[in-house]
Length: 340
Image (tube, rainbow, N blue to C red):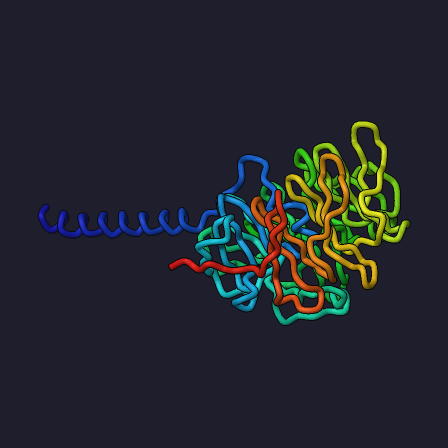
């Protein structure tokens, strides 16, 4: 009996330890899904390269001082900390993970007009670490809704198309051959302007992967808010327009060609393209009062967080500026206060 116990007990222990290790590894490798509706970033940041993303009380950003690697900081710009060594753009975040397009060495003809060199679609834990590749092909315009990532996928056979993949990385698939830029909308929808068949503004239903037109025109970069729909009117030299959802009336926000724009809580920021009079400008959202000049010159990549507006020089993207997103203007160079 003692001999049997000497054999059985170690076997039980070994089996128990093995089972424990199996479940521990399975627990550690499980993908945490979002139970509530979550968008990975704002529409305005999405259209401006997704270089900053605020979530979970932090700002995740592409750090220009460290080869655009992934960092985090507090919304006041303090306690910056590196999360991994990837060069990143189109950053999205939920409570569990950070998603981004790895800005690598690939450079395809379809993406040649962009300042980014797209590579793979990646996911990392919210505290940083090594990336899991969800799609190894060139990727741009990543937009998270709930547990699905929509993005522009490039390959030599189909060129640029709209793809989607679950945050678990399973079954990446083409949604449509039209490379639609799906940006966060309202109540679980995504907003976009047509690219090939028309240029109307539509809402995308992620449940059915179908779109419904809500405004007909020659539109570009629409942003869907609770009360208004903002867009660039390509038929009118890219004037910045606003549709009031209450009465369906369209008004002009900026009587000039606009290259890019974004929204804070109180203001709309936009780059006025007007030759020697070009400038980054803003107007108040509530009454569209007189245009204020933020900074003379040509600027791009306007990213907004709760505390600051970040933007870069069009001619030197390593020069990043910031100003308070709301209230008095105070333009200064982007200063990164590293965690000690």
